[in-house]
Length: 245
Image (cartoon, rainbow, N blue to C red; front, top):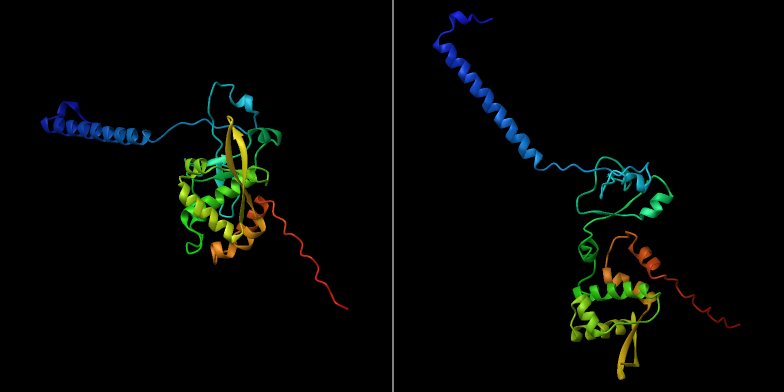
């Protein structure tokens, strides 16, 4: 224990320096903690063991499900989410029906209009950028209209895809020559005025047949099988060959 009767001027200088050092150290720690706190946001977790309404009885408007992603493709409820731009595609009603969710479909880069990893696999020598966009839009609309012929005006094509009328006409001509598309112009009346409406119909079998040319040496990543399912594709049986006796 220090003998305060024997404290001299040098002792006061040492004590003052120690106090200053302590204050400086504390301030630096506070600055570090303050900088870290700027990046910390508290979130409330959705408890899958509770029902939907019980989770929001506390007045919250938004809660989070945390999932982990394993290297073999499994997603489980855990302590981390894939990233802040991902969306988990899940029907909340089905999750309620089947209790604790054990599987999620995670949609990465969900706000972009292009799946780049798939888009770059096309063979550019066979199908150009705007032709890829037009083809995929045709396929999506074909499915949306129940695999039946559907109408799509040049004005709407330009508004939806940004492809001008002349260019759209050339793409349509190419697809018709390839055999993947047929068109039919039907006349109708709109506000008492005659109109010509173009109906589009796709040949699923020809699309599947042309996949090797569209993609070249694309690896077997399940794309062809998924596209067949998307197109509700069933190959037409070939007529039996006649045998001469």
